[in-house]
Image (tube, rainbow, N blue to C red; front, top):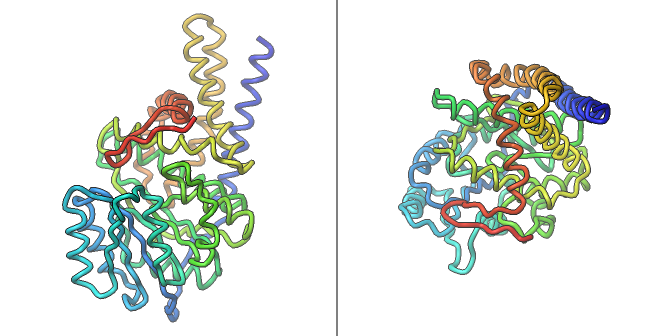
Length: 376
């Protein structure tokens, strides 16, 4: 029992220190203010899509509303063999504006990662801005990114992404969890040891991106954003920036159902065994271990009473530091209303993280109608 108590204390302390470091990093990043300056940096906006006919019209509308001069924006739309009207909509849009172009992938080439590579190789802009077909940016989105680049000369700029909650618990849970990831992402940038980015809102210097194509782990279907970050982190540790700006936010849609949500989390977890960055590995291990330990305490509490108090102590320590961190992050995003889902989410979180954290390494998952099998 002494060994169990010591382990519980150690894993709780490790988790509290981890989140406290992210909180310190978050607080160290000042809110960015877009400057009114001469904007003459060319950007290539890259969107890879597959079966997104419901989302593309909104994205096209948002792109047309951008305050950044369209003469400096190149829009590359890459169709990953859609079997709905997505390609038709993209073609119609590219025909209607002078700065957009549709790229159709060859029949033997598939997958989002390859779609992004193809577009990057054809891009002409100084900056590559990656986003998703279901993303919805504000009118000053590109302007804020370019302003950040002009002031920092960063080779990689990570920007905020939020999930739009629909008012029910399921989408609220997704939004809350996603913001915890974005907050952790920003926090890791704030302590100059970034471990995550989100490909729905990512900007990379084009030359730096092309120089690092060989490091993107061809054997897996996704993860180009994180692997690009980790390689640039080795070469340009002080030129990686998180753009903490409300104007730079893009919002994305939540998973439509539990199955889609689970498949997405399995896909995220599938990349973990390819990580070699020590901080990222340590972060992943701490988060997985504390959730597995909470699950273990929950099960054992039905058989041995001491595990009720042991698990309760670990749960309390985790909940307190999570509450402090999330409250700070939600205040920036003006989404404090999501805290009403916080307590119930804490009880569910360790259950599904324990499953996806392990199963994601060997179970196949579905992505855009395709089944992706794990390489063991």
